[in-house]
Amino acid sequence: MPEVIVYTSPGCPDCAAVKRYLDAQGVAFEERDLSRPGLADEAKSRYGVRVAPITVIDGEASYGTFAAQKARLEVAFGRAS
Image (cartoon, rainbow, N blue to C red; front, side, top):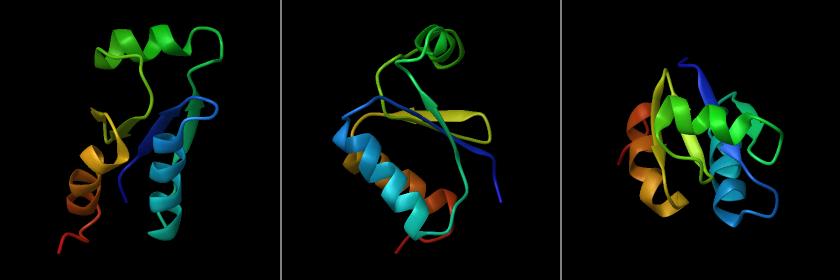
């Protein structure tokens, strides 16, 4: 199973949707809250963005709405239809 990190922010509906999707698929992930000191800068320096949600799968980041990320998530976890 690939390493998955999800950068989130409080109250973000797309962040919640990404986490719900991963949970429903049985995918373990590490959550990093962008409102914590230094994490937005970390995301910006590593992935070029600091706006949640940012989903990192084995070092490759995608960002944007859950709808924009869903197809990539399905491919990454072998569940594409």
